[in-house]
Length: 519
Image (cartoon, rainbow, N blue to C red; front, side, top):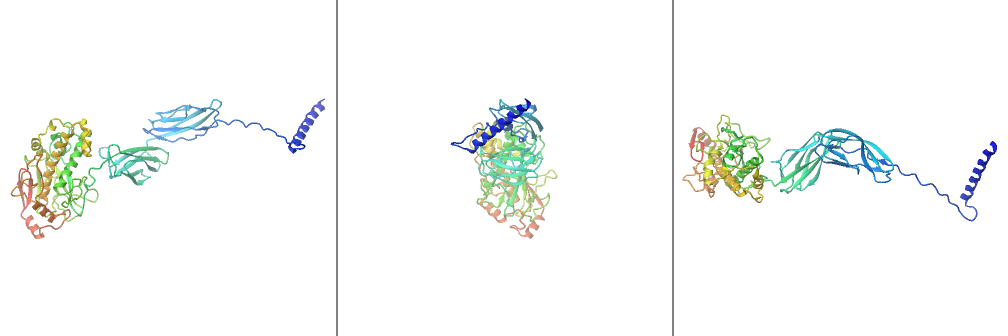
């Protein structure tokens, strides 16, 4: 019995094999076909094994991926926790804005209704930061003016890329190991122009973007021209007066209503900053035509003298107190806007008689040898211009007006006309005194007899309709002695200079200025 049980299956198997062999050979009148079984269903598998890092305060988004799904996949967090500020949506998107740094480990689960899969992941949130370390002015970049970029918190080399370039700018000076670069906006600027630069930490993949708003450059041509012109730096940071303001210049602005009277700090609020910058630039715009240059600082048909917006940097120095220019092409003259101690005297300077090398400003003993005193101008100015702004000073509500004035844009309404007229008038008045005192330092004496509108008159008529200029004789005299920065010879001979200097110093006082005159 047992034996027969074993034989029958064997015979059956043999018969089946033989039958299959015959079918495979296709003997007789036709072929045969054997159908295979369908393949097993694919297995749901999460294919995302790593996710990018993020940075605090920067929007984050990434989507998880899976293969082999038999239906819609639903994602969930099965263990661990995401960084603060991030969440996992059912469609597999992790998004949000991280609020804490560190490495965050977690496990996600994918479910297609038939099977599930899990995957351990981690997200590193760093403190990578990108900012403009130099070059912005009141939060703005200016066209064709370099901005220095720097990163902090990077773990390895940093790469920089341009995400948006509305100004037409360019990256340069990229130093990956230091995480620094230079961004120079192009020539397109305006209230809606913004460039975006991205820094990427190659060590952990963190990225961060910086948006740079670009405005028209109001001082693009106000640069020093050493060796070819007499360079004068107008210093607005001096403080010799006794008051709560950071400088005498800011005290003068407060006196005419162009700074909040209670804003006494070094910087002030945004309105204070905008007004101080606008008036400073407006002084240069008014000063240049007085020296026959274009208002924007370009040369025009002017005298060989330049008024840079920024104090000349590395390689250039103002001469020390009680020294001369000494024929050095890397020295420049300084004119200070400061507080006057003598009532009625609104400026002071040397009369250099075209020696043209004694332009130094000595404040070491509380003395101003080259300076203009805006505080002494204020009362005269207020009366001449019927100034009401001093009774209703600028506030944060005037920010849009001040920005429009700074960038010479159309009026945004508000107190535009009042602030424009008072600001330009005050800048023009101060610039006329600057021109007068600079004229003395370049060798000009008072115009005698007085001539209407001459900058070198002993007294000035301050009014909205007054014009200020050098006489044709003044221009001829200046042209014979300029350029003067570093000039070792002038209209006088060396013997004449020595003789003049040996006669001592005479102090002359007038309504407009007090100047020390070499005789």
